[in-house]
Amino acid sequence: MIRIHLDETTRDELKALRRADLPHKVRDRIEMVTLSDVGWPAPRIAGHFGRHPQTVRDLLRSFLARGSSALHPSRSGPDPDLERRDRVEAALRELLRRGRTWTSGQLSRALTERDISLGARQVRRYLKRMGARYRRTGSTLRHKQDPAKAERARRVLANLKARAEAGLLKLYYLDECGFAPTLPTGCSWALRGERKLVEYEAPQGRRANAIAAYRPYDLSPRLEVFAAERTWDAYDLLGFLGALPCSRLPRVVVLDNAGLHTGRVVRAARARLAARRGIYLYFLPAYSPELNEIEPVFRQVKYQEMPRRSYTTRSGLREAVVTAFDGYGRRLRPKRVERPRPAA
Image 1 (cartoon, rainbow, N blue to C red):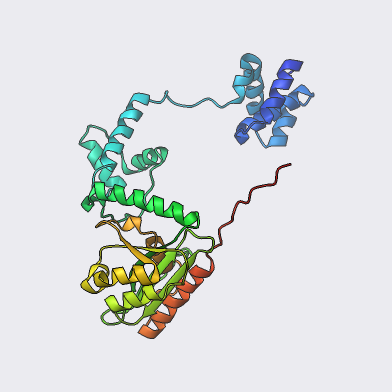
Image 2 (image 1 turned 90 degrees about the horizontal axis):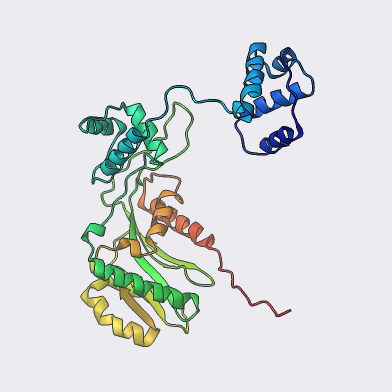
């Protein structure tokens, strides 16, 4: 009969090892060795763990021969080819940086042209090891930006944000957003074998539009919105600016270079807005929507706050848009003010 007799040093080592984050197989092997040390025979240990007695005997013999290293399962097969792994991962990174989309099958064929033979399933394993994910693509306009102007705008906005957080001004981000009667397709949970279907409605002449101003850097963040079943003009924009909450602090409104914002009517009214109402307009450089912090608000409202994705009337669509913006605005949390603690 095989019997393990542990000395105090080995017993303490196993106790410390049991407190570590280990695979279940390693934990079971530690318990088998410990039970053998207290006098359990191999058949009894095997019955306790639901294993074959010969499996337990092999473990105990291995532990007597190799010590604690026998507790960890040995890797089967040949040693990994680390050089090939690095070569494959380098090739995949170079391919993924190209300006095109890829499937695992297309990557497999592209690797074949580099004398690397991998099937689509093997390619997916490599991609998961690298931390890559199969994700929905996005759109960008950064390739059309003037980098110098965009960087200058980032510095200006950082300064405005700091002054707004210090309570020296009110900073708004303004833009317009259109809503079609059938909203863009998104994601939803569904039962296996089922798929959510959205009833399509033609958009011609049935859109609702919203103009919104978002004030995130304030003790009380706000979202001002006006929605209608028509398109906007410059006088609508000026009326919306004039309806912003009054304040004794200067109000800076960040907006893009759309024709509605830079037209003759708005240009002529800028001096009057600044002198009479304390409203100053700051125009972002062209092709820089990522600098306007109201864009994520529009995306959240359009994709998350409107669970019903199709509307048969413009009035119903407008009401849903107003409800979605109101729900988002109500969840804006007041910012906490860190007050200095009194000296002890």
